Length: 403
Image (cartoon, rainbow, N blue to C red; front, side, top):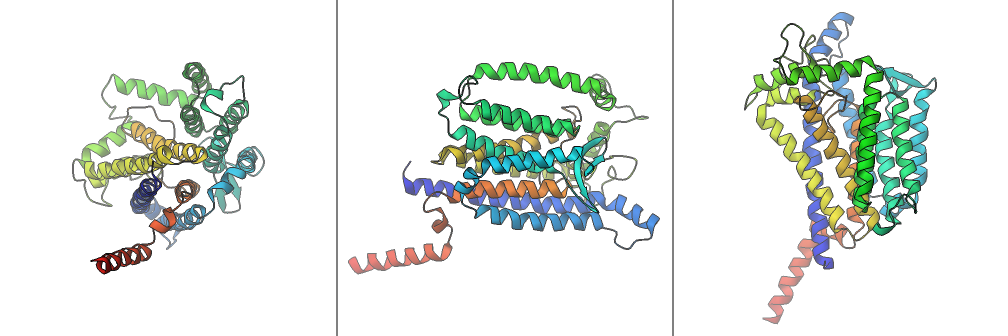
């Protein structure tokens, strides 16, 4: 591809990614305000506090902070990420292992948070990005024909298993599945032989079955899912998926109106602001709102994959591919869970679900992808409108002088 054409592709990808991310982020903050309103009002009445929307304001603060981090990450040289990939991954693993220390904090049966006073952080969200950066660096050094377990891919394969295992130590099976998806997807992008994926898939199904059977709440979720496949919703004892489907049905095409949803109120959707916020979008903004969310994730994935396909550096191709697999794959998984296609396994919707660590990590990942695009010669200059206008003016004047 010619250098000028490559610059144009990167510029288009950057604009697409920025627009899609911005729309998702704004929509996420708005929907968190809406989804947390009932519980926030109830809590404020019980405790006599005037700060009714403290949770939603906190999400807004994290979103703004994540934007700053994402912009800074975009201007970090791509080669610096590649050189520091192993230390970044090591720090990510260390932070994740700290959840098994007294610093660890348990929520809903998963010890996947670190707590420092009133502040908590979910290290597994940042481990996803650290894993992407390290695998991109490790696999970029190998030619596709060399990606064999018996050759030089052992460091990457062991690292992938270590990242998945570290998350499972905290009991968070949903996040572990996302990390596994990232790892498998990146090995596929790197050109690993297809014969390995069948073995990995078989082992993953067996291991997941053991993990589900070992924990009663996981087994109950799968049982509810199977029951819903062959029967109508139980009106007396509805599941989370039942409430979500009722929310979509109530929303119809145009939605009931922002802030007016009924299923987000206490006693209905238990995680309306987190894993099931897509149902709140469906009820209040209707099918139109849901399609906007889907379209933005498709645009985000398209922009990242444009960089993945056309970037001259193998590290950048793998890193952007990994970020696309993470953000779009996790979004798809969340939507399939909320619509009842998959059993509930606790995966938030990127940029939209409540969670400070998640939104900061996602924006950080977008920043890394933009850094890769900006590393292509000429891209930074093409994004400066003043320079483009001046260049065109000079071209017109020069053409006029020749005439």
